[in-house]
Image 1 (cartoon, rainbow, N blue to C red):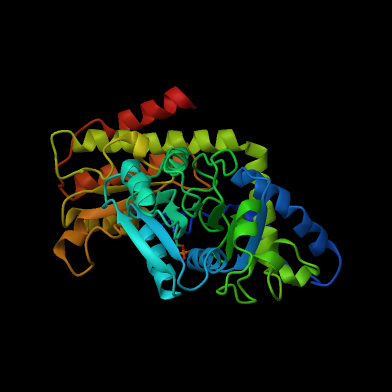
Image 2 (cartoon, rainbow, N blue to C red):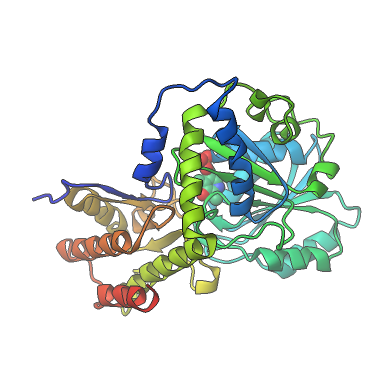
Length: 400
Ligand SMILES: *Cc1c(COP(=O)(O)O)cnc(C)c1O
């Protein structure tokens, strides 16, 4: 008998839970886009968008999703035939590389697999090999949402500096912004990409590219930056409409305003602490379930290399799919599918899942999801270790 009736919980790694405050802020008729309150409200967004990214640099906003954000970054960073070095730690890094290649950019990929962090010695060696400095930018994910591997961005910057290479550093923070600590300026990041539907708690539809003054000066003449994608007029428009090269995404902007208010009220260090704690809660449960049960485990062995917004894990095929279905239909919790670990046509695909813990999520939501998973493991007779919920609760007790 299903117990799913009630408020459902979408615990997938994006789109994330939309706060009621954001939904209410969006629930209004179309505002005037030529003068009045919308114009003033939008002016208030830019300082806060810089604040969440940790930058005093430029920010361009696009009507688009994360893939749109990638293309926006590609279009401004590169001219046709220029070269990118892409560091891939999962499906999303590879996809960014594909999008760049499809636009006519020459792409070299360093693929670190699905469970290992970036090896900075390999990055440094690749940059040293590029004696002619053909590589214009290094592209990487901060947190790859498929593998949940986190890249140590300050260490990457250090490797680039050690190689004495002038390449720009561009980071995809789509999964991590507003969840995992990120400091664009302090960490020497030139370009950063994000979208609104994950840590920024707003329905899909807005993409962002932050860029440093260095990047602006080095990328002023990209021949891929067609009028819609060029970041210059968006970041420094003469007229309001140029922020989006057309009609503003009116209601999304009101939602974003409210979401940024929520982040401001909580404070970024606290937002990061909350996500780190909830991530460790999930990890503690998996450690207990997996004790003596090697088919259950986290994708990333070392906690230092795990993102704080999403956790990729395995339960052994077909148990991950069975568990996901049970949690959704019996208890109202939707977990994420495994991505990039096995093709959806392979039996192994049914051994992977992901738990999203990004954005508008708190202790009771995460503990609730874990308790439902525990119930599912019991109901489905999936062998697992004991003590997961006590371990998870212990993390909350020690850090709340
Ligand atoms: C979600 C995500 C994307 C893709 O975003 P879409 O909105 O689905 O286009 C890209 N990179 C990362 C790291 C993501 O988490």
